[in-house]
Image (tube, rainbow, N blue to C red; front, side):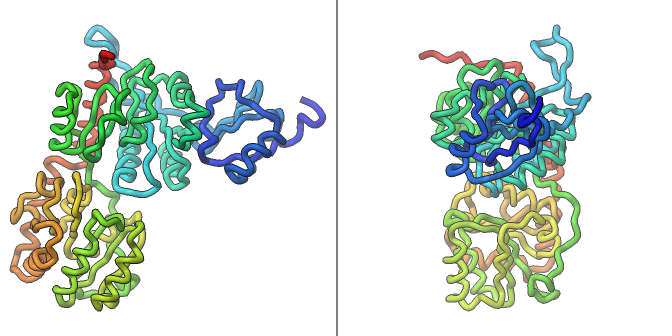
Length: 448
């Protein structure tokens, strides 16, 4: 390349709905001025310098930190995949063992329990040597975690624009990566999985989702046995439904400094790890706290109801005892520093907080939403109370605080439950096994 072609190519790119195009889609190219005119107003500006790249480009951000594909040349920051990984029998006993390849499609929010577990699980699979590629929204914190684990990523907006103007992107990524299975995390991801994939697709159910969003999935993963039964009742063959729990294992971390959260060192502290949404019952927790003298409450999470909950805390006279901490990534440090973990939800299909409390040796108090009702044994490994019953919740909290030995007994029993069923290794073993079975089952025959 000579003259102007040797100059640095600068183009506006955005980690968003116009990104994620793979290099093989070389037909979708435009001159830099045209890219600026189209992408600038819609997506904003992100300058990328590509020395020696011809200034004819298309919008693409794939494989780790980023990639721009140019006519005739591609520059990429691809992180090498591990050479050794989880082996399974492809095509039955006669086939040789091969390294498992999983393409993940994740269209969830930037923060949330299911989204956090997806990132944690994918990282754990990478440690096992599973070869993976992730198609996800352009959230920088998630991007950094995947890159740190050596997991290539492609960004896709999952918007109506993407579906209409770029319907072949996911299929193109799948054809290039050649996975053994595609894992669609939650309903929006399930709704964009192409029908004519060469491999089977699995849909992940962290809730009682409508199966209409998973019409192109061949097998189904449910976080609880109750959700699995829900899927089977709607006509899915039982042999294609697998229970794959979430895990409560968190990296070791010291307790957070209570002084930094304006909390006395000798105060009793109840911790709530939750989105601030009406279904999470934060208002029930605040009303209960008003009836428990001296109890401090840490609420770690964010969401649309934060303002209303802060106002409620003020009306209840709790401003000096309630701390709204925002979304936190140091769950283990908060659990280490609290006395009781509380799950006050009105609606909770599972609740990873349950097993996180058990893993951290903290007594659990929860409302009898679906997940807690299925997994918590009242009086043995936790205390349960009715949904929306603030006096009953307050009574449970007072009981843990005042009844001699109860907190320790609940914590010990919870730890045994965690070690038996919900450790990181146990859950990832189940997930890998479920992948293997879904691959062996193959595509689901459908009649029209």
